[in-house]
View 1: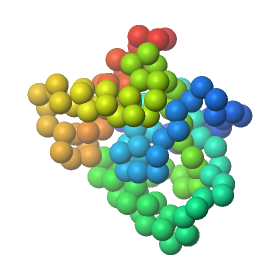
View 2: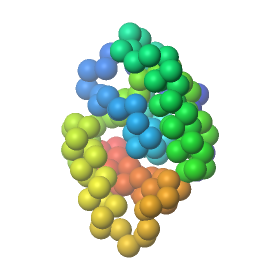
View 3: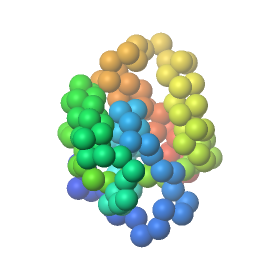
Length: 129
């Protein structure tokens, strides 16, 4: 898996895109959905302190490193293109949980989760492309 964060384009408008949360799980989502399906914008006006954001960034970096994914650039809000399988962030999380629950492969380590998410997004986006 080769995530090239420089290939992820910037959004002019977030309309029609699902905003991802600043979490380890959503960082993994942004890394596995494919650059054609992920966008970013500079993060402005955060209500978090710089120290709190640094903790979130560090946790995200560690999670991506455990998944053997290059570190994601800091300072951005990330978005994913919806599909009929998921039109909201909640629906995306639910669909991913169902996909993982149905799998016979383990998904406790970030690298194992990475592989299952890659499969999920490959299937989901192949139905709309």
